[in-house]
Image (cartoon, rainbow, N blue to C red; front, side, top):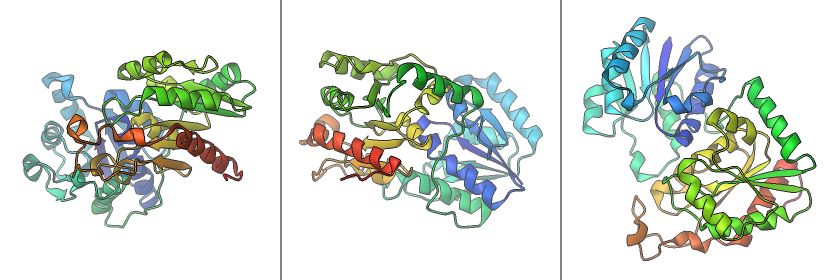
Length: 349
């Protein structure tokens, strides 16, 4: 069997889809699982032992790129395709490529027409975790229940691992703990105040043997600059826009712990083996119940409020906005230290 697994949205979404490849190959070692991802996300799967080949697609590619991809996919004679996130233009492309069995979530009217093996999942209600939804779709293909204790795992190449070793050797040669703080969410969630991130960074940088770095890229710039404007401790180094994704994965692999909102880099860190602390809003569509870290060492901080949002965050229309202010600096510092202790096998009290 040759299966095309498509996940063409954002970094964190793809990370929470990675267990599909590992679980699928473990259940059927003789099957081939190919990954179809957005061009920017290709580094996340290019070294994955569960992925036989990597394909890329972007809606911005245009008709000529789509036509070329259709012909290439048709030549592969895929037995089935699984769209972990439904996108009508991509589904139509897979129909044109002659892939007869098309699995995915029945989320939009067009999905009922384009997916002939679709599943009704109610993802927007936020009642289950995104990774479990993905594994449920795999189960429809394999006919076997997927395990619920799977963890996302990112595999890096030798050059990326060397980038990580070099980063730690040069930037934190004597550090016992390397911590990354990432204040921006790229619009995927509510943001904690940059001044609070700055305060956490200062407290962690003052700990013996700790080295603290602030990460960010593109749209994270305003949050990082606001951290600096709030009086960032001079011992904290800012890495804003310093690395492309492939190199950033290597740098991130050198760390021990990561603090950030519900965003892709948090899931990258967890899948690379770091301890992670996530700051999450309570609304179901953004909550840790739907998007929380699924790695071994993690903590989530959620404001203890009665959220009026039924599915999506009401943002400025909410009388509790911004409820993340209920999460205190000391609570975040304690969570980071507890996760590091768990990861190192030390007492966390």
